[in-house]
Length: 315
Ligand code: SF4
Image (cartoon, rainbow, N blue to C red; front, side, top):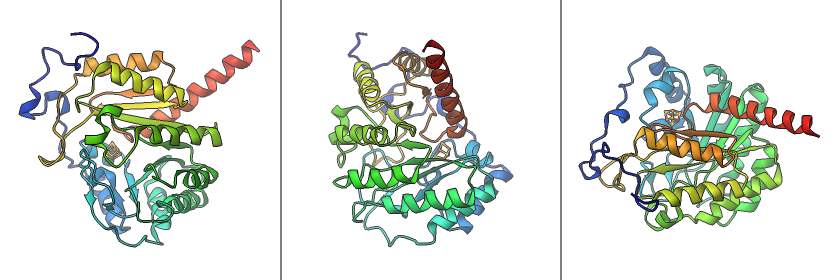
């Protein structure tokens, strides 16, 4: 295998069978705590990406009361080949949503919350204003909860959207690159790789204290050197935190899994990413943007403090 070959190994199952290997299988969500989290979300009329994306970690996360809220409705204006969220004409923005998100955070007793949204290309601000309102409500009602947002690319309205959201002051700004640039036309056709990178660069330029985060899915046909290049691009944009997880096909209508990347291969990617200077790296088959987000945030903050202390000691 040379560096340009897909990262397969002898024990990797044949991708065309689309059967999940043992390391992907997860337990069915059955705990009482899982049911409580689900009932709370339903009761407040909140959508979650955990359910909409059919996330394999839902049993574990919801048992621990970790849910990623998806604001701005459950209908997306894009149709990415990897994503399970419905596509179409979304409904009106819910003015009560920010208060409901804050209520959910308070009732779940969250130390860290992740908020994401569908793409809203139909809205003049792309939905940035609703992110701002959610952040403000959370700061008002649960001031000790750290806030991570995972936003769309705000196509054609990126600069004002970034300015407004950065001014609201989330702790972590996440925007996923999702895959390598060569695969954008088929996997993420409505988006542009360099526009997404620029978005994250702009966040840092506006406020270097906000942690930036981005992720890629593996198993879509990317090659190893392409993944290394994405890491280099992210470091050039000063992205602090990289997540890497296995792409799973939500339905037969979605892009097929080209490869189930082994846990060892994920560990190797993780080691390379750390060597390239990311403050925090999460790389495993079941890693998702928001998986263990609270614990990872605490580690990332500690890593930055250690870095600053080291720099001060040298000065
Ligand atoms: S990994 Fe993220 S999306 Fe998946 S269940 Fe956990 S919080 Fe939800």
